[in-house]
Image (cartoon, rainbow, N blue to C red):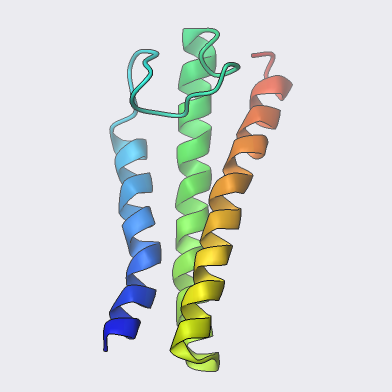
Length: 109
């Protein structure tokens, strides 16, 4: 039962975080909260664009993680399902960074 809870809590937890970032984006450039890279912190316009875009990507990644969790749980042993789910989630979260940077560059930020 612990394995099931652990496996099925990863995606929804990140989904909640992504929703909070989307619902309550940082208003001003800061070093504590939001999508913080040198390119995103160059201007307020870049900051707003980066935070809106990255929160949308994070919502997609976390939603896909929820689906992957359920599928893998039904196909694999619990330990394997958790490892693969964590790997999928980490890869997705890491992918948000270059995708957001490309989006910023395309938009002249």
